[in-house]
Length: 168
View (cartoon, rainbow, N blue to C red):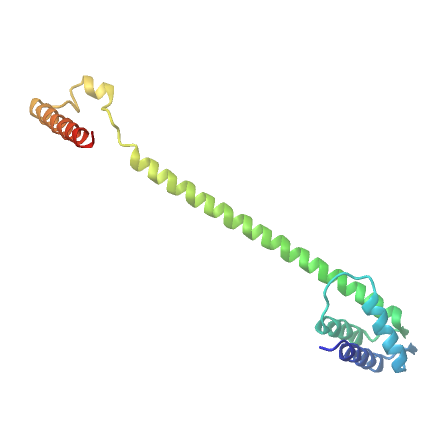
C-alpha cells in the first residue's frame, strides 16, 4: 500500500476513535490526526506493525471510553501497551515451540533407544553354551553333528582356497 494512503488510513482510524470516545480534551483537526500518525510511525518501537495491529489498538481505545482526554499521549501509551502485549505473546509462543521441539526430540531419542534395545536383544543369542550346562551334558554336540560340522568346515576352506587361486 502507498505510504500516503497508509498514513491517511491511520489518521481516519484515529479520527473515528476520537469521535467515538467521550473525552473532555481530544483531537479534532486533520492536522492533529496527521501529527499523531507521524509521531507513532517515527516512534522508537521495534516491531513490524500492520494496519490490523493499529486497528486493534484503536478498537481498544474506542471500547475503553473512560478518558478525560484523548490526545497523542494516550495513543502513544496504548501503542506501548500493545507492543508489550505483542512481545509477551511472541515470547510465550517461542517458549511453547521450544518446549514442543524438546519433547519431540526426546520422543525420537527414546524411540531410537528402544529400537536399539530390541536389536540388541535379538543379537544376544549365545554363541557358546553355558559352562554349567556344558558340564552337565547339555548343549554338547553328538558324534554325527561334530562330523557334519567338520565336513562343512572342509568345504568352506576348499571354496576359500579356490577363490584365492582364481584371484592370484
